Length: 223
Image 1 (cartoon, rainbow, N blue to C red):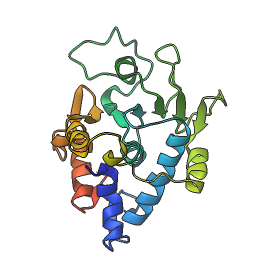
Image 2: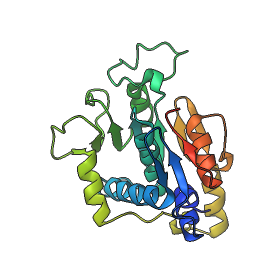
Image 3: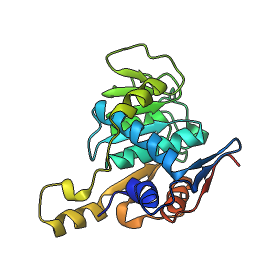
């Protein structure tokens, strides 16, 4: 089984569509080559922060382009992105106090999935869950041992970008590896876990965006 981020980005660049539009925002259009460069750099930084295949990465970002980059970078490492619905994106909510009918907050998802890395646009409350590392998009890092600023991570990642991790890199008979990969969780959005065999799916916004990129279609954000 190939890597979803590879199929969404690298494959189009390899096929000569490097300058084709991949993402459209109200401010600009970004081609496949540029998105691939940024995703590879961010994945390299995540790898340096200890993210490994199968690990959970909690993404609690408000900016849609940043969220997409973090999502694809996590997939590139064959880790599992856990996305927070923006309606309940606060990280300060007590995970025990939110009504069950509500979409889970970042705090609830952190307790549930125990992510190794948290990518956040707000200061992360360590009492909720203490991840191995925190990548901040906006807040100033306070703990140099565990916290890294987004721009610094991207600069460092550009010196050692991460290649797309493949299922074939896992030890075991090929048929067993591919069967297990198909049934493995590809990503989580709120209360929904999406399996690899279910991709592309249209039940989530990020799923529709991933499906568009897989099909070589530009994704429109912020409209």
